[in-house]
Image 1 (cartoon, protein in one colour):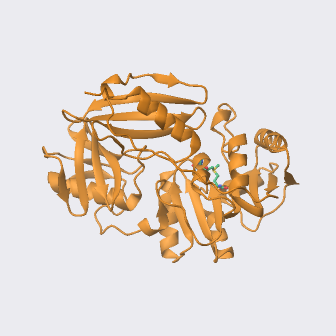
Image 2 (cartoon, rainbow, N blue to C red; image 1 turned 180 degrees about the horizontal axis):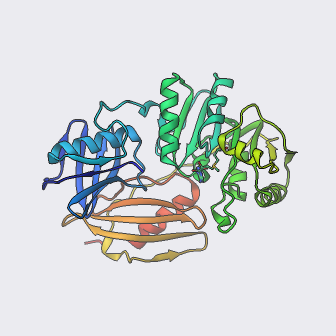
Image 3 (cartoon, rainbow, N blue to C red; image 1 turned 90 degrees about the vertical axis):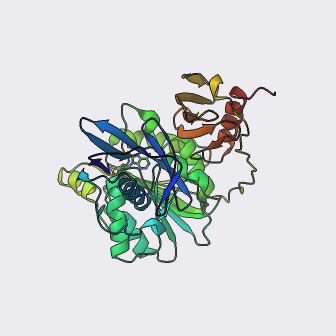
Length: 375
Ligand SMILES: C[S@@+](CC[C@H](N)C(=O)[O-])C[C@H]1O[C@@H](n2cnc3c(N)ncnc32)[C@H](O)[C@@H]1O
């Protein structure tokens, strides 16, 4: 994880701007940053006689913006870097932002889309980009070093049709309009034998895939796990109408490092192709994710359970006399989102939830729980 140790920090009065970075406020270890209209937190904690500067996993800043925030914070505090695993922190920040998407961006592309979830070393993602120069390839990954690695290659090889997003792949499809996707690849997903609710393939995911796939578009699952193959096959078969193609030990044009390891061990490899035969309805939904006044003192540090979803206030911190920072896990039980809310007279999401029907219900419920008393 990109982090560094510095020798000192000095007291800073917030808000303050340095270079391109606005430092908005500080709560406990969290410092709210705004760079190029994107907001995220960095965290500063004392460790012995030094300070650990690291990124916040929930707001997931893209690396070029994170580096800018680190640099400006170090500038402001006149600190020296003691140790760092942030590549190029001392050099000019290289701009890879243009290849990144964040979850609150609009996913409106005029070209057809291909999606790969959990691209790892990116061998297959790069292959897709070269095979389909006329399409936009969206690569989804949650492992920062893999993201850094692919960004360097995209820049080095001057590839223009890949976009990377650092987010849970189970949630990203709901950002995409219906019938826009040529194909979806899920190659060697983590089998999660002991935590099946974390699997990428689920009934929800299959239905979302069918919605975003164009007619004749396909979802390709490739796995070396007998268990995962069986589980996924059953999930696909549970749907009413569905066309599936199954293969065993079929070679692809490219082999990732991960796959070659299994091949050497002569493990079986299974492919499931699910072909979409329908044109899905457009998402024609209107959402309202605004708050107005929220009374954070009504929030209890616990999970509020409802039939379809959970709202869990995990952290409740006072920012100033009027505002609180709430760290909330909310949404469907098996794939909730982690969010920050600034609660006060003019409340807002510091990082927004994905706009879809269930989240609208969750939002409205949360608004009800923290409703301000009319004065
Ligand atoms: C076993 S590796 C396979 C990597 C690559 N597809 C390959 O074939 O070599 C699984 C990858 O999925 C990523 N991953 C796991 N869960 C994910 C999720 N919910 N969303 C996006 N990526 C995920 C992991 O970080 C890891 O890089």
